[in-house]
Length: 429
Image (cartoon, rainbow, N blue to C red; front, side, top):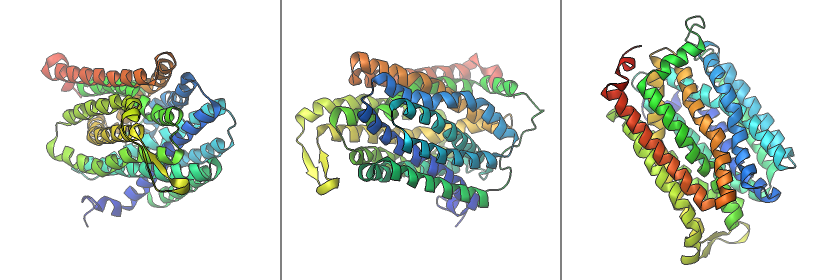
């Protein structure tokens, strides 16, 4: 089987090792989101404190993302992956020992540090070592592994949290990270990134060159506004399900798994389609608007609970109550899964292509990340305050509005750059 075929990428030992880091990172992220809903319920947190669960995670990443991108460009990326996996393990130990909401916030900050190490480094290395003409396929397949892992995290994490609570759950996550550590240590080449000479350009010069590219500028602006809306879903949907409708950890896992399954099933194929059709900016736009539709549908869970009949699947400890609220949230999150599968491979491909113009793929990926992190720092607190003041429905609809505005801004800036507003920069490397 060819290494560039759909499944052949998994025959490559280096891709397998990198996929291990994506698996460990994504499974931890999704499982901890369910745990956050349980912590919010147990500690009776306000919307503001729940927002800080997200802000703490993103604030640390915002601080380290730029220097980390330059270090990955100029140093041995393998070492960053190994350290990131060890930070994962330390995070799980901390979560198992928390006793109040403020300790949860502290552990989220540590989790943010480890996740940045794994995400920026892993996606950069995949982009750099992928075969010519197959970058979208490799990136799409890499993200597909993350989506499948996140799906497994929702299911397995939900079951573990429902049955054994936190200690056993975080012990299992630690073992997964240690296995990924072994794969990277054994299979990944030394210095898989690090193509750029540190003396060729300063970090600020490289970032300035990238930001003068019209496509990068429009993508950075888009991701800043889009992240505010998306964080409302990522952070508050599990909390909304738990605190408003009393959904169990097991059921929350199934709810989130539906959207993740859609995302996992479609993302590799969408990356392939992006390679063949080009016009990646249209994929980004369509994916974003679809995400807004899914987000706006979440608050319909309340009215649907009063209209649709309820029933139960299964019996015993894992009986699953199905009512209008659960069905509505399930469908809304499935729509969001479709949206992400359309948007993500195209967005990553655009950033990698722009970064290659300056032999600084990791710096481009850092800009991609930092534009997300700014909104991720601000967004959770804003949404949390709106929840406290006006209710969760208004908070979700405001988040959908942010996404629509982000999409309109992206399209306007992209067209301005193509029609001459940024033409001089577009052709200047």
